[in-house]
Image (cartoon, rainbow, N blue to C red; front, side, top):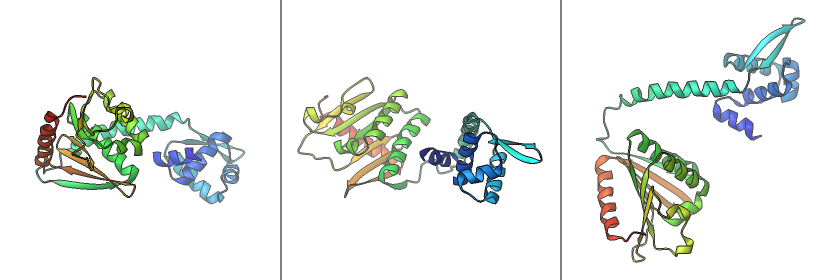
Length: 248
């Protein structure tokens, strides 16, 4: 059941997700009936109910000296999530203040697969927002979008919602094969690399970071280099190539 997995991602463990869903279905219920519904030992259900009570997701009342458990509205989850988000928003800036290197020492992180690509692309947006960057420079191979259509579509929508401009260099491909995401609009400009210079990887340059993506054996790899000198060098190289290309 996907909703159980979603609740686990939210922060509940597997037993808590099962019991909370069961409570929502049964409404006011005893531990005995809940244990029967989720097929767990009653002692385990008692422990789980106490955990959910501590998390503010249920209340307890007695009838004929028997405990009955009532689920709190799922809106409680939304409220708790908002409170956590507000807390993080207040804490994260202070956490960044503990970073003493200020980007002077280069660092590199390596990512693989679909989830790795999503992490890096999210970082491109987040860094652009945090540092109030107004432009991203990129070199993109067409199969990059083909392998991650949903991720790229959502990423493009979010970038445009945040008013972040992007310059893209793509290989020389037939017009009818170009994706919508390559065409020029108010927040995107694309130029085409000549066939004599094939593009072997995709690159995003944003702030003091450079993300490099490569595809090998149908597996995507990404490396993010955080270094102002490296990013400056890549921007200069990008700019030199960009200026030699015709607008599309």
